[in-house]
Every structure is written in C-alpha cells, then in structure tokens.
Length: 327
Ligand code: SF4
Image 1 (cartoon, rainbow, N blue to C red):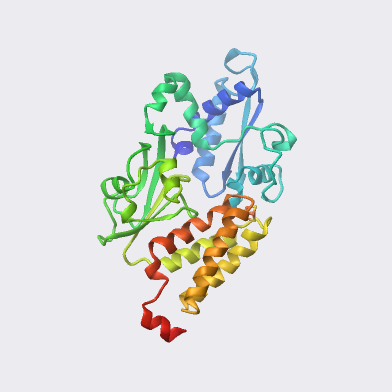
Image 2: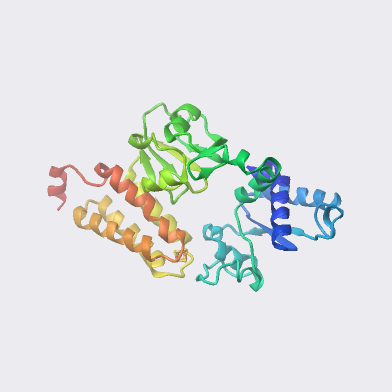
C-alpha cells in the first residue's frame, strides 16, 4: 500500500537512514508478485534522481546515496532478513545463522541496516513533526499507525491505516462490517499465514504488539482474515503446517521435517485415527518447532496450529461416541 501509494515516503525514509549511518547504496527488495509496487518504486526513484534527491551530492550536499529495486522470486522466507540478504546477493534464499548480525556483517559482508517498509516510511513524519507527535498515536509500547488488511469472509475488505489500540472486534465488526456471508464470525487469523486464530471471545484484544503477544498471538504484517461459522479449523491447522512445509528453506530440522510430520499427523486426526495421542503429538511437535527453529517461519507455524487446538478444540475432538467407534 505504501510503496504503491506513496513511494517517495520510502525513498525519503531510506535516504535519512542512509545519511545517518553513512551508507551510499540502498536496495528495495520486492517479491515479483507485486508488479505495481515495483513499477511505482522504479518511477519514483527515477524522478528522485532527476530532481537531485538521489545519486551524488543529493540536495546539493556532500552526501551521496543511490537506490535500486531488486525483484525476488517470491519465497516467503526471503522476508527473513538474512535470507533476504542471501537472495540479494544472488543465491538461494536460505537463512543465515546469527551472529553475526547484519548490522555487523550484512549485504556483501558490509554492515547493513535492514528494516521493513513501515519502519522507513515512519521516519519522515517523526523528523518533521517530532517523536511526541508520532507517539501520540497508539497505546502502550505500540506507537504510531499500522496499515491493516481486512480480508477473507468480510463485508468491507480492504486496506485501512489506523493507530494502534483499536480492538480486534472494532476492526472486524465496525470497520469490516462482519462477514460477507452474513453468518456469525467464528475465527479471525491475525498477522498473516503464521498468525494465531482468535475466537470472538478475544475480540476485546487491542491491536497492540504486547496485547496480542499476551494472548499467544501476533500482529505480524497487520493482516486480518475472517472466517464464518462454516470453517473447519482442522483444515486451517493443516494448512499452516503445509504452508511451512512448502515455504521452508530447509536449513533446520524442526521446520523442514517437523512441518511435513505435522501435516501427516493432522491428517490422521482428520481421519479420526488415535485422536487423543495424535493431538498430544501435534502439541509436542509445535513446542519443538517453536523453540527449536532457526527463524520465525518454523518458529511461528505453531501459532495458528496451537491457537486452533486451544480455541476450537471441538473441531479436533469428535463427540465421545464417534471417538469410541473410530478407535
Ligand atoms: S525455521 Fe524453516 S525457514 Fe527458518 S531457517 Fe529453519 S528451515 Fe529455514
């Protein structure tokens, strides 16, 4: 939304960051599924160069800074900073073990500042209006605004920018207008494909990093996907493991092997095979992935799985008579 709608904000934020740390070259890494963002950023960079705001002696100063857009093939894991650096350097996107941190040993072995679009885009406002003006938006430690994507089974889907602090219920019911089908909202996945599923009982959760973390959730990139009461949460849990299996970079065992075993085990639960034992196995596997994975792809996959198990357990555990018959 920001790169397509206001690419100069990103350029300005990156230029300020570059001048601050003494960097002379910056890269904007965009996956190929976002051609409009690529086009808008390239056009804006060209305009900034023509205007003397990028290149040598920018704005008539002694500072030099150039920007380049690099288009990635679209691997999810290339959103992880070290994997992104590998891809930028022309290699397959595999996560690097840390340390060394990119700030010490980053792109092409040089100290590198690596941040997401939101962080860079916030810089011009903070410098122009002051830190207090920025901090006036939001609550607790979550300050500023967040572009939120309302999607899935929702009446008024789309992109909305709002200050941190509005509740999940306000976002889904008031801004989003409830489900598109008109059926009751049953589950909401917050934070992307690795975000936790929240039931209506948790709709009083404020959109705030700490508040979501306190309820075993995450805000992630601000994506909210709504499901009505026809959703089968076993399928959603299976999808999370499958997503991880497909997108895993393969560097570490809990994610590479665990996700595939996770798909198999949830499929057994779906076939009503040894449900109690396999549920315990999935929970154990999730803990191994959560604490043993090298990066957030494997480490966060348990969020959708465990939240589905915790808040929607009735989907996984059949009625006692059915269970006895199956076992
Ligand atoms: S958690 Fe998955 S994506 Fe991350 S380093 Fe391990 S194998 Fe790669």
